[in-house]
Length: 320
Image 1: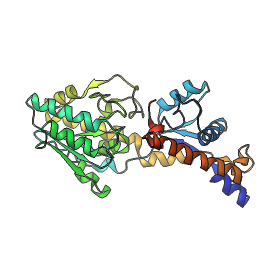
Image 2: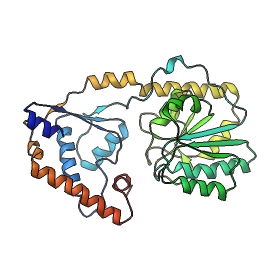
Image 3: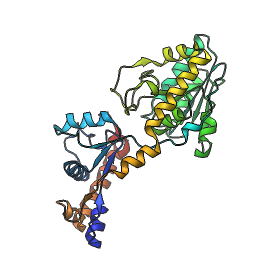
Image 4: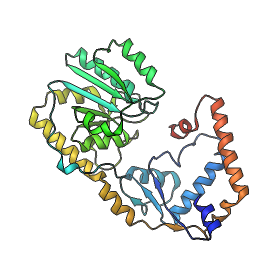
């Protein structure tokens, strides 16, 4: 779109690219050949890398792309996406006398913690702990989760709450003793002072890197980043904490969330220097013929995977 606008308006528009998920330009390693649209995407990606107009939102992605490409990615802009604001004025967190757990997010395959947390809750109950787990969200795995709740006879302690309006997020999540999740919701929960356990994407084991406050940098969602620990063990340990220990953990999460503040993100964006597009080597991609090929490639590839029972988004996010 930027290339087309620059060409039509004869204005040298600038472009930068922010890479949020590590799979964005590394998927398809096992395909015989990447589709045309994705080869074009990667030409743009590596061009912007060459002119230092890339931004990565965590340090592990830098390591991954340096390894995959053999190129030096140390010069990319590195900063986390702004998620939280106004966290310094929050009152001290209050904890319940039992384990009050919660998750908020889309119920989709790669957020597999929504399923293994049911095994965790079942084990905590077997160990004699009083526990409650509220799941907010909707999506294609909702029915699978509901079936497992019934199979494990957890209907009295696990509740599918459906969609949560964002205006209610702070009010609802602040009531949890522990938040389990991924993405921006995890950081927002931490900013509320709620100890937050990392739900590793595409991992079917009941394991985690631990609390968000314990990881060293900005990376936390993806598999293979840090040593894993049993989610059951972490929750059992937490249940033995006294009020002071819980408050210390809460404050550590607020401090960690400050790394993902909107103010810091804005300051970082102001330092980014977009790359001019009008006279770049990529200008030919604004032609009608290229746009026809690109769009046709997206449509054809999407339909091909639909016939195989998968969406394009699932292919892109697949660890395969």
